[in-house]
Length: 265
Image (cartoon, rainbow, N blue to C red):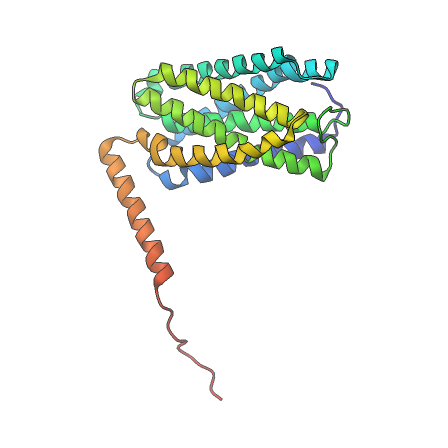
C-alpha cells in the first residue's frame, strides 16, 4: 500500500491506533494487575500486532482495492470479510491452545491482548487508507473529520477484538474451544463488515461499535478474564476487589473536618 503520504501523518495515525491498546489494557486488565501472567500477555500483544498487519493487507486486497476499482461494495467482498474473520479466529485458536499457554491458564488474558494488538493495527490501517484524498468513503484527507472517525474506530475496535479474544481464551481454559472459535469467527467477520461499510457507504453503522465495546468489556471483566485464575487466586482477587470497593466507598462517605489553623480576624 503505497499512498505517498507524509511520514508525520503515518506516524500520527499509527500512534492513534496504539491508543486503543492503552485504553483496552487499562479498561480490561487494570484491576487484574498482579494476578495474571504478564510475559504471556505482552508476547501475545506482539503476536496481535503481526496478525493485524497481515489482516490489513488481506482487507486491502479482498475489499478496499476492489471497492476502489468498482466504486461499489460487492456482496462477494462482504462474504470474504466473513471468511477473514473465521481465519482470524482460527489463528487465535492456534496461538491460545499451545501447551505453554494452557498450562499457565493464560489463554483468557493472552487472548485479550492478542485482540487488542490486532484491532489496533487494523484501525491504524483503515485510518491510513482514509487519509488518502482519493478515498471513496464519506471522509477523506488528513483533517479533523477523519481524525474524529479514526478515534471512534480505534477506541472501539481493539476493545471489541480484545473481548472476543478473552472469550475465545476462556473457552480454551474451559476445554470447549471449537464451538466458541466458530462463534467468534462469525462475530469478527461481521465486525469487519460493519466497520468497512461504515467508513465507505453507511457511516450510521459505526454507531453500533461503542455498544459492542461496552458489552464486551463488561463480559470480559466479570467472566472471561477472571477464568484465567485458579480458584484460590480468584478468591483472593475477588477479596481484593471487595476491599478496594469498600475503601472507595468509605473515602467518598467520610466527613471532612474543619481546618486546624483558621485565619484570625
